[in-house]
Amino acid sequence: MKKIHVFILLFCTLTIAAQAQWTTMNSGTTDDLYAVRFSDEDNGLVCGENGTILKTTNGGINWVIVPCSTTTYLNSIAYTSATTAYIAGYDGTVLKSTDSGNSWISLNTGTFKHLTSVYFLDANTGFAAGESGEIIKTSDAGNTWTKINSGVSDYLHSIFFTSPDTGYMTGNAGAIIKTTNAGTTWSALNSGTTVGIYSLYFTNALNGFAVTYDGNILKTSNAGTTWTSQSLGGFLTPLTSVYFTDENNGYAVGVVGTINHTNNGGASWVQQTSGSVEVLQAVYFTNTIIGYAVGQGGTILKTINGGVTSVKDFSDEIINVYPNPASDAVYIGTENNIIYSVQMVTPNGQKVMEQNNIDEQKVQLNISDIKPGLYFLEIIGEQMYRKAIVVE
Image (cartoon, rainbow, N blue to C red):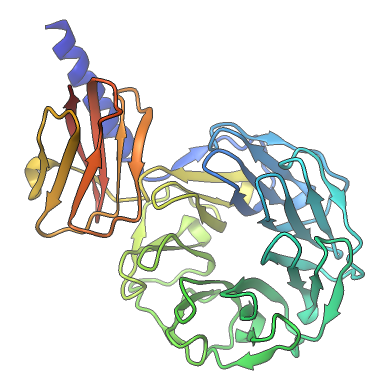
């Protein structure tokens, strides 16, 4: 009987924990934070005002402050490898680390303009952009930088390349510019808006999304030739950052703790509960379900289930898991839902396996290497579903 009581307690504890879609992490700072990036699921960086750089090596559970040589605003992060990263900021600042973010050197960029975005195509080729339409490019891993004529005088806020030749930047006054020759020249696109566009993300060569400070999400399906506003519904709040984990699932964050999610490629968006009222400045996911949002007052939020709205018991849905108990393989099938990802965890929450980017109604898991015992399957679809399973 004692074992049965322990099992019930663990199950209830896990169910309650999963209903908190986004969890506030202890950042150790009250400075505003503007960017977040990870090199893998464990190792990540956050930067912000007053030269703040934070580092985690355990998936955001703990953050340590990393000293650097500047006290200016740091606005954007780019990794080129597990050990090499760049941070761009005000006064022409570009910092570089070659030891996984433990130490930083300041690069000579040749500009004193405020830089708001940095983006690298590979280990050597990168761009930074910002104030007054300033664009600088490096072809030697940041050793030297060359100024490029953007053709605009507005602040540029975001950079994204869909190939080594084709890239986009967005900025104030509805600015969207595009290059098709690796950044040598840029041409203006018609965004259909005159308000600031703070972030953009492309899921492939044709489909891209941009978020505006009047709360709209713009989408292109023809590589930027035209842009249309997506339906959000309700009261629109200014949006600051957009990120997609695949062609269907995307997140857009903004003021008052706003987090919007789409699971159908932007056709519709649903607001998630962030638990925060702070301005969120950036969002990033390390896989399809683990993500982070950072912002005002040292805010760092984390989700481990894609920010889904609730956890449902299998009795409420037509989802089959068989056999159970299982030894070599387990099958998961659903008639009316798309399965995005599955992970198997121990009763204390330790992940033992996962399968991402499924996007099917049926999936087979190979569990032949899993030790015998009690586990939980956590299945991410429109919501998060959980099933206890015994491995023999």
